[in-house]
Amino acid sequence: MRIVSLAGGIGGARFLRGLRSTAPDSEITVIGNTGDDISLYGLRVCPDLDTVMYTLGGGINEEQGWGRRDESHVVKEELAAYGVEPQWFGLGDRDFATHIVRTQMLDAGYPLSAVTEALCARWQPGVRLIPMTDDRAETHVVISDERGRRAIHFQEWWVRLRASVPAEQIILVGADQAAPAPGVLEAIAAADAVILPPSNPVVSIGTILQIKGVREALEAKTVVGVSPIVGGAPVRGMADACLTAIGVATTAQAVLELYGTPLVNGWLVAEEDAGVALDGVEVEARPLIMHDVAAAADIARAALDLAVRLAGGGAEPPAPAAGPGASREETPEAGTEGSR
Image 1 (cartoon, rainbow, N blue to C red):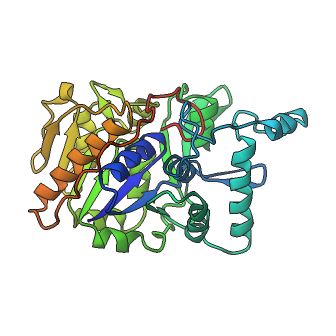
Image 2: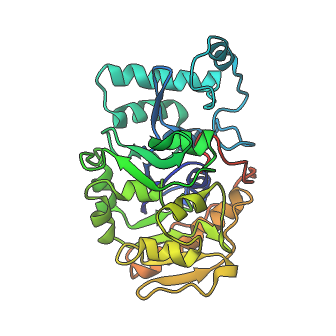
């Protein structure tokens, strides 16, 4: 079975670990958000791509959900000693190596999609990971504070300010010129099912949908989404601050309406949100908290089964894998690299 999933950071990565576990023989393509990408210390940092790569490759820091395990921060401390800014964005020593390799390859003329493929050759994530675009498209946030009305990079708003200053606008700068990375539209066209994991609907999934041709390609497929909102609160992170910025309520119903039809054909909600409904969308209620890999696999299995049923049974759902290994999926504190 050919499956395509759009993904942001931690929530998407943990869902994908469950998806890979429940469908180990399927061909899974992940289209990763790059709107969070930022240049720091002369290096190109791609938080969401790295979170997916590290999580599926077994190198993630499980407790915080982002960055490398067994990490040290000597370089960060030395940069701080020199007074180098920003000091609010934490990169570990092991993580620095990834960004150095990426930046060297980009500077040599390789597109981000080729660089990502090369990095994944080390990590072997078990999926094909493609950035949404090879072009530079960064998410910025318009705020008003003691310095006046201004636009700052999403990472500054999310990590340094922890979304404590209300966002007046969230803008993907460069979206008008950004083309899908090679393989994005082709993977969608060939997919038997498309899954929208419980990633941030505004700055993760919503960002990918802004890339030219992506939403239109998805509307021709069977798409099942997993609600990132449970009982009126985000499953993790500060998605409520992002939804407020675009005038959308923090409910499973409002997020479904935000995606709308004909994009979404099926929608999984938590049991406490069982009343959600939208014409043309099949809604199913079930437990949605990813306590561990087994729980994430159960959610992924429900999404795949619903997608196959809605598609008319044209593709056989993959047989469930037996006994996914235990791995902690608790929600860490938000406000750090990739914590969405």
